Length: 164
Length: 413
Image (tube, rainbow over all chains, first blue to last red; front, side, top):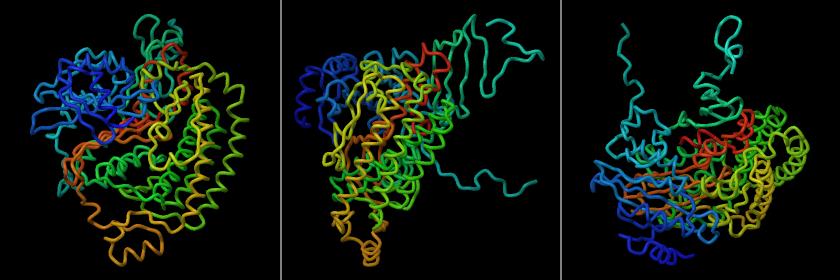
């Protein structure tokens, strides 16, 4: 299936709720409004996109938004297995809350937990929303947001000049 | 459990080394397995038991999280390559090829065929080594120390092959955008063919001592069954999903590099149990050996072809060109390290030994990635602990853990 065909297919599946479709390198990204995201996910699942490959969040501080993308594909449908569709939704950066899609795609469960701890996105209705990889104190800092800056430490940082 | 089981004559609590037991409620016990190395690396599984039947399992991962995604954002485009391969040093080429592919997609650059064949060659050497590593760990889990010794010993054959090809046993940092860092040495094809012949013979011996061993079969058959639909629902990857009857291999569904020119099969089993997962790995090693032979044949037939694009070669100063022509080594220029990549978003996927790896790479046109998202096979397989383990007896947990070839450093990133 060519990227153009995937675009047409997605436009047909998500008719009436698309804010933008774009052919990216290696996948087709479709942006929907926040209130439509559950319905869009349900329709994609029904069309045969049966699992989530990656729940990807990207922080855009200049536009004051966090974009969460569900990269979905298929195992059971051999034709759809060849393509990846990114279902995207933009969340306000100061209060990023969205409905969890774990109820639709079980494979999103652990990755939503990851987005929660690294970006502070809250997924309403998630069965078990707590940090996955980080300790809670570190998760508080939302470390993958752009305003968390990795500072380089020198080798001797914190070492006193003289030992008393 | 009765009182006599929970106390010893000295009055202290009943303890096993490495295990913490506390009474949660009547008849249900909570056991913390790990995080100190239950077999393959640091992770913890919190299991709740009724008698010795697991009623709930919670994989508590993240003990070896190394901030790969964040660090990739603060270093130039090339530098994440040696960083990312630290997730799975045994599978270093497989884990970096999709990242390099993503960069190549953004740059609209493609490697010359010889470079692609060299990448595939190293990927398959890595895949065999990765499966053998998995077998070794599996042997430890099941108390089969011969399997552990054999697999780790035979893995050395392939680690040495990789060393001859790239100069490093593990973490080769071999692919770079547009090509590879080193051409194949003259005597490599003969070495590779010998290793392939050796491994084919050994697999037959593995079957006798391990796969057809009645003790092993009894411990694996019908254990940890993942039905086909559930496998798709959980989104698990690699040999685990192929053991459940789903024919999904990135090399097949979206061939990258030169996999569409090579002749190989994707083994699929229907049973979905631990034994089927083990057999998939054995069959995959056989296929990888076939691919290694085809790749070295092709490389021998096409001697002297370039391993980096012409436009990159033309930019090299005289000395670098001489080194490249004499020894086959590509010496990179500083300009390579500080290159800019056109703005855009790309996804690239690849098939590692343990399964599918997905990279999402976003560029804003600068000298560092804007965002790198990596989802490794073990990260997607971790969910098996939560949904497949409950209902089994505690003694089945090591068998399931070993059969899914879960690798914590890869999962935690």
